[in-house]
Length: 127
Image (tube, rainbow, N blue to C red; front, top):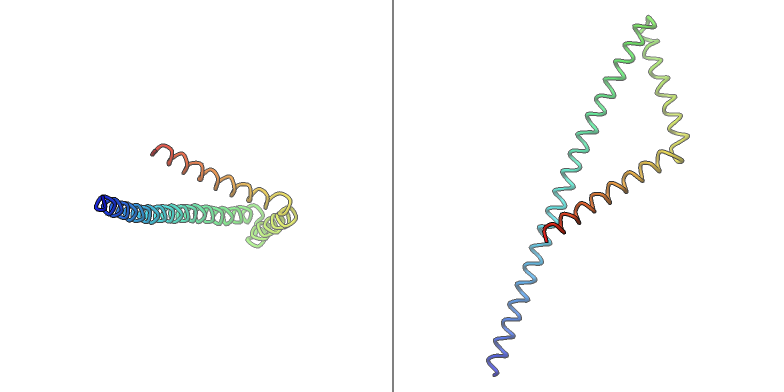
C-alpha cells in the first residue's frame, strides 16, 4: 500500500513537471508567434507608408512642374504647390483635435480589436 502511494506521488510529480514544461513551451511558441506577427505587420505597414510617401512626393513634383508649365515660371509653379501645402497644414492644424485625432484613434482601436477577434476565431477553429 505504501508503494502505491509513493508510485502515485511519483506519477503526480512527473505529470506536474510535464505540464509545466508543456505550458512553458506553449508560452514560448505563443510569444514567438505574436512577435513574428508584430514584426510582419510593422514591415508591411512601413512598406506601404514608404510607397505612399514616394507617390505623394512624385505627385507633388509633377504638380509643381505642371503648374510651372502653365504659369510660365518654375518659381510660380513651385510657389503655388508651397501655398497648397501651407493651406493644407493650416486646415489640419485647426481640425486635428475635433476630427483627425478621433478618426485615427477609432481606426487604431478597430484594427486592434479586429485582429484580436481574428486571433480568437483561429484559436476556436483549432480546438
